[in-house]
Image (cartoon, rainbow, N blue to C red; front, side, top):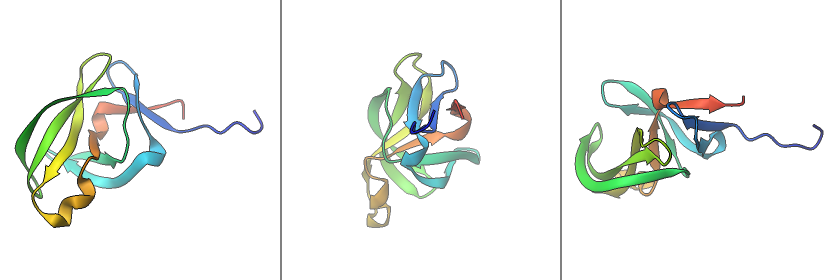
Length: 107
């Protein structure tokens, strides 16, 4: 397999549909409710977003939309649609995937 570049990918834990690439992780130290680990991704794929809503998070209230697997509909995390504190602008238009809701694919 000389010359082949393998890209480490993550998939939905329920149906294994690819949803993100390891190279697109922005931060690994995110926390989803009840101290569950999560990753912040710059890009995701094969997901659909639910309605936008203001939701309290550990860092304050943000407008977010839940992110669902496009194949099985499982909720995998959320996307930041609007932030109300400039210190959190880096989250805007990025997606958080909860670690236990995704699996490594072929690596």
